[in-house]
Length: 147
Picture 1 (cartoon, one colour):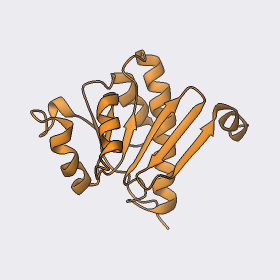
Picture 2 (tube, rainbow, N blue to C red):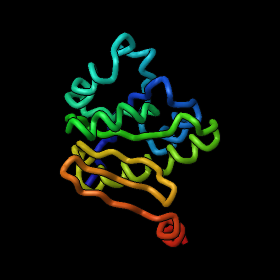
Picture 3 (cartoon, helix red, strand yellow):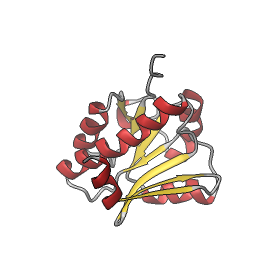
Picture 4 (cartoon, one colour):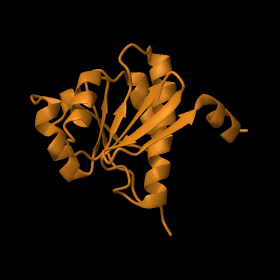
């Protein structure tokens, strides 16, 4: 059975070029929001359109991510890359997080990432679903998985 196509990732102004390279290495097509049809809009105004497109949002706007969680905003998936990462770190972490997203989609279908947010924490990778489900993968678990 062929793998489902991966969704587009819209990258906000906080996403560094290295992160876009990391997403692209995992076969995602990236669109820089300032060069897109949503360039004049705030995330709150276009997140519903991304849901309709089945497109993900990569953001470094941690306040927006909190808003999405606090208000149970419907979205097709969010990948959070903190803006303080340098280009090299952003590339490495974006590639890692994109791999998680790709595996979910390949295993469970094109809508598998809906209403999920993935981000890095000091202790590993966290995935939150709006249902309240939360999955954490420690750095140690990830190290053992690649051995």
